[in-house]
Length: 296
Image (tube, rainbow, N blue to C red; front, side, top):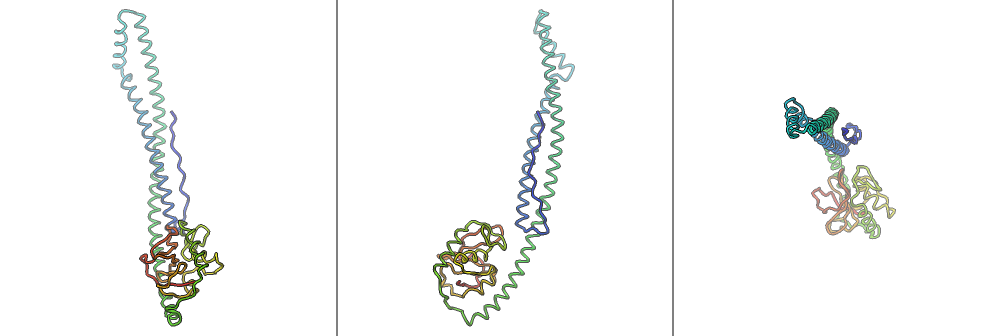
């Protein structure tokens, strides 16, 4: 038998200083998959080494000592009674059997030596992967903390901007009901629904990945209505309405205008929520503070 150590696809290189937490998490998943494969290979190699060692041990027990050989030879001779030819034949058969067992034990010993080297190499690979996994986990945690800090700072800045904007707009359009373009709104809702399940990527505006404002801009773009790919600018490009005036296609802004979703009726919105998530439908009141309701 030939010893074999499985090969594993290496996880792609990654620069932890520039990668996002989501990208590091994907890298970590690759490393863990690679480590699981290496552990499975190690288990298989160890099982094969145990089998080879069992062959060696059995040969040693049955033929490996003078007493064991004398016992077998004596039994072979005695069983042949007084027939010399039978005794010689029995001894020859024993000699052949002993030779076969010796060769089998020799082959097993050679395999055991190769398997031992393969096992050592596999153990070293697993140790290296464990170290990489520890480094990736640390980098992911640091990236998550940095992203949370940046998001909090952006939210605070946006809240200040929103407060100033709301103060300036309150006298002109508070409580007003903007005109409703049913065709454009219907087309926008259908476009957004067609993207359900597609991944969130920060800064993306299609065709297969989106962030929150990119999805809204793309949805109204099918009707040649141009909206800026920015939640704060999009707020200024739309008209305020009351919650009771919401129609499918109207926009709902959340968390200091850091997030925007599209109302689709029945108390639900469709949106691209965050990294690691997908375009989906949620309740209008989904746990984030609502800044206001706007119509395109």
